[in-house]
Amino acid sequence: MTARRIAYEEACDAELLQWSTQIVMLKAKTERADPEIRMYCRKALDALQLSHEKAERKQLELKTAKRGDWEGFRAAMDEARMLIRISFCGLVAKLS
Image (cartoon, rainbow, N blue to C red):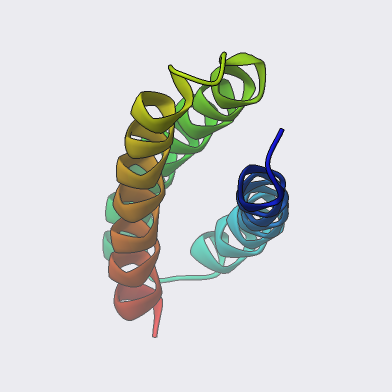
């Protein structure tokens, strides 16, 4: 395994762990929000949780991918990470 691949996988692991913590914090903040905002945020958090779980599955695929398949899995993981970042930004903006 190359150093570049190891570094990428470690960065993904760290980001997934950080997002897990942030999801818990956003859930708590959502419960303190106004009812109208709470309803929107609960739906958005459910979608975010599903995206996070999908990214975790992609990460497992990435870790077990053979050398030739790795770039394809990396592209899928990059897309999943981007979607999660966008979802986080929307939720944080709504709760601010």
